[in-house]
Picture 1: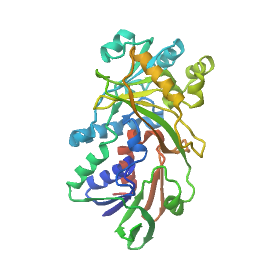
Picture 2: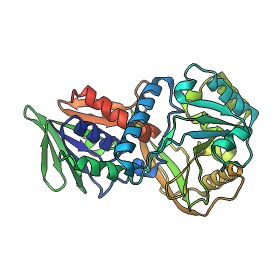
Picture 3: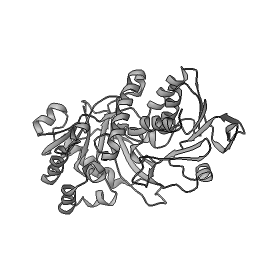
Picture 4: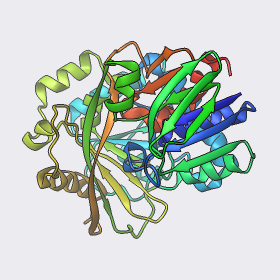
Amino acid sequence: MRIVIVGGGILGTSHARSAVLRGHHVIHLEREPEARGATVRNFGLVWVSGRSAGELAVANRSRDLWEEIGRSVPGVGFRPAGSMTLLRTADEVAVAEDVVARADAADRGFRLLDPDEVIAVNPALRGKYLAGLHCTRDGAVESRVALPAIRDALSATGRYEFHPGCEAREVTSSSDGVSVRDDAGRVHRGDAVVLCAGAAHGGLVREVAGDLPVRRVRLQMMQTAPLDEPLTTAIADGDSFRYYPAFAGDTLDELRTRQPQPEVAAEHRMQLLCVQRLHGGLTIGDTHHYDEPFDFDVAEAPYDHLRGVVEELLGRDLPPIVRRWAGVYSQCTDPDEIVCRREVSPGIWVVTGPGGRGMTLGPAIGEDTADTMAL
């Protein structure tokens, strides 16, 4: 079969990879010279630890797929680094004790460590904390270089064509298959098309699919100059418990009651996530803004807060901040759906809305769509 994929982010690229691996020919369209959306603006984290019970199996499957991709495409920079959520209060430790005692703790690779055990795993963590929740199943990839590396590997099969700077304007379906007309008037024909347009919910997506159960979320992040020592795991703070469904329960409810977030963290719906890039710099975030229209500028207070938290956990000053940025991703609002996947006309599929889980779940979502389409 001949499959047309629209959108060059992690979802589009994962769908292209799944189709090529099954022997199909893929025409891949991306409106920018290179993907510029949420995929390349994120941490590159493959984050199994925080997924809900309903998402855990697909998250673990996707993590294993990333490991396979990392072996066959070393340029994606996959490493099974794990994560360490550092706990600074007794209430945060209580939440960690609760989740470690649950039946699915082993599937998440959870271990609760005392400070000496934390340092044995990640010697850079010489700051102030009471304990660490270690997740051995978490990993990371290099988000800014992973997509070109995967595309190069797909191109080598002879069954993959990438067309950058090519915006899809019209999609039609007939008994002969599907046709996608781009902004240069070229027509790309195939047996099916998958629209993975990310946070672009209007335009072509709205025209073919109407209003979907999705919303957009804006975040702020930053990156430092290289740290002069390895950070052997990704790190998070106890505020991350508030934003990941894996930690929901009575103990978390008690934490919320007894331990309100600092004002700036609450205002910007913040948690700390931090991962070291292969070049040594730290990518640090993040915030959550849900109400549109989004500000076009970035606020400094969240960066000050995050810098302070990281320095407290490392027990040292951070290297200089070398860049700051904002990003917007698409989030499905139906709690029963991991991603919004619809066949809106015969042979025309729309897949969007993985939320902040796109990098984690992308390979498995692409695989599941291929199964659903009987590719």
